Image (cartoon, rainbow, N blue to C red; front, side, top):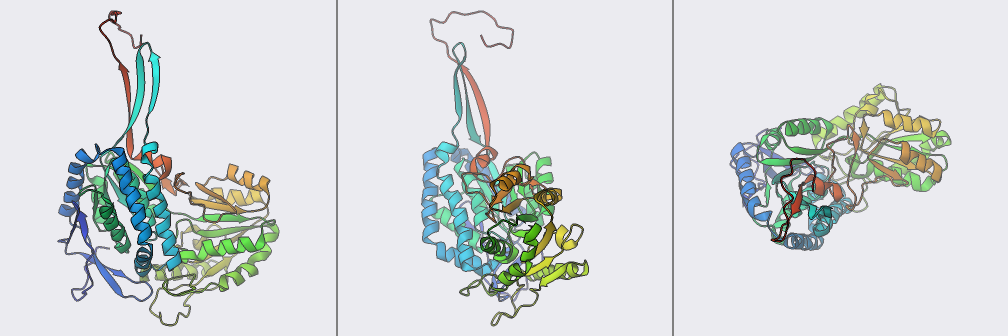
Length: 507
């Protein structure tokens, strides 16, 4: 919300980036960046003014005139340098991320690393942005295509991956020759800004990458601005749908990765210990605050007897601040998230689900003010229950039952979301049946969080994704470029004229 911060807060301010300079915002609206384990105010983030947004876009538009003509090798070398700088500063980046977002230090390093992989992919832009040529499509005529950048592109990123998802966006957009306007999450922008500093250090010229902060007003300004050609978004379905509709109505390309209710099928033949470990990690890691978290497990047949074992496994996970050694489950990102998750747990009980493990109000010595909810497990969950129908975005696992794989697949395909899914089985036939019939973007076979590596593109189906092309991989090169097709014929002095051709045939 655009709520002013108390004047007595003396925390440092997060800066805007315009024309290569870190700029103090002139706004009167600020939001506190809060450590979710302690409630300590770490910084104040500005909600940029319309003039500041316009200045950032204008600068990016002007810079595009020269950046688009920068040799492709020169662009690639910037990202070779950036990947080196990210590696060298991994510990610092992870510490920043944990302080403002809450996830454990090892998970924070994973957050940075999965973004780093996209930076490395961007360094390969020379082969990714190649056009095509067909020789002699007609007599003396060649046709070829080139992939040219669009102009100013923009990215709107969520709180749950403040390193990885910005790195999904601006490296590929910039490597393809565009300039970029980034709006990080207003809840945890500090690690994003440190990555931006490293990008400048790596050699990204002034104006190629600009950063503004804010809430709804800034998002709408990005969607509406006539000089922004494409918008990439990751976040909730509600906001993503708004962004997609508003941006496309303004004539922009848009890709929106949105909400999820990720299901996993557990077949009776699955490796029990491996499966239980995978489910516990994917359901409760990052306190369930992943768009690819496993939030529903469908137990098929005899696997329904595994509920006590899963509860026992979840009880072994340690709850605490992300900075503490051996911690598995950190705090939720905000007090609002804490209240929402606790409210949904209460609603699950009221709707008749069986609460097998109650993670509310855990004891976390030394961090009594933290937004902690421990691993929570419901069984007997069915569609129509709020705990099933809504994306909880907390460490809450719903267990459903199915008699066979057909019933389990039907349940998953009837859910409005289609972000990620997985099956645990030792049967190749069951796995192939699953991958063939399931209507979900990311599919795991004995892999609980099947986010693809950057050689491939993140995708999604139904309410989880709007837009034809996904982030990173080959698809994002198409998203951030326009294909120009050239048909050419050259004449020399000895060419004999064939007269006027009034048809559309090439002769």
